[in-house]
Image (cartoon, rainbow, N blue to C red; front, side, top):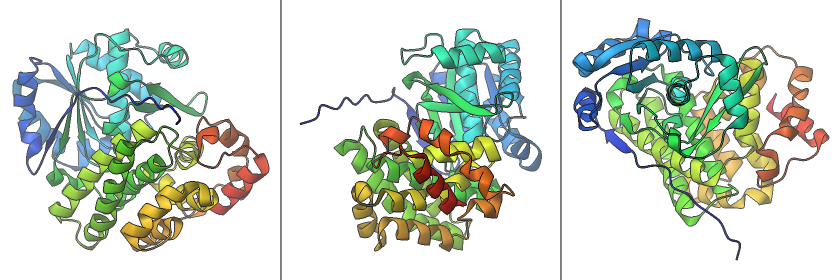
Length: 379
């Protein structure tokens, strides 16, 4: 029997249910912290009342915010946020937004702990990082407004515009102290963004089932996540205000994010990172494009996920995921969401082979011609 090591993430608290965000202040008091700095993006800050609502919930604990975190967490803006949080004397970092904002909060907390306030300093830490505990981290609170599940994982990505590359940190210490799952907040999330980000969680669950560190524990989490997602997402599509369906999706993100953190992921995630870093495709849309083709390419090697989806959705894995994506009205090809050429897409083949996911995928990706063929299908 193969020996597999599984390490749980650090203990975290999940506060869930309608109105949960209003309880953030008392939750911070229990942790004896009092200087909360909020990270968010321009859409939430300028087009919704959520930032003002959070400030109200924090009361005197609020010490400032940074609202220019962009897609894929650009490094220059992240460093600006770190400098602003340090100047405010923050002992708590809150993320209000989607996966990019959540990733920003994780890396900002690490930068505060390590004393990093430059891009070169962060680059050096990315190269030299270990998975040893990070001392001196501020309290970290995640209030997600999408279904990407980034708040439940140990990793966080950051886009380096000078190097045109996405990299990041991965450490169990980066799991937040508190996650707030409030379905009421999703009324301010565009339906396309909500639904596409949830396909990211489908991707987490499917690839966790084929993960190189998969265990019965992660399998159970991933299977239940897929049950919830395949049931709740069509309900969200039919009625974007259905808070019961939204709550089920949020629960699924919790399960799927924890599953893939424990089990590992494959080339659907890896190629998605390439599409995001090189072509600016949002995380969730990347999964819409990559996952069905990777599942078909894996074939028999991805049998566990196929068996689960046959039971959950009544169809083979690739067919079930493809049908769900199309039912939700989401894109299925790179050419639908980007004006890049086929040649530009296929030029990513050497980078795909260099992904850490490639040798760990259920079916190893180790041939450039096969990578080019797979990228052509995705195009």
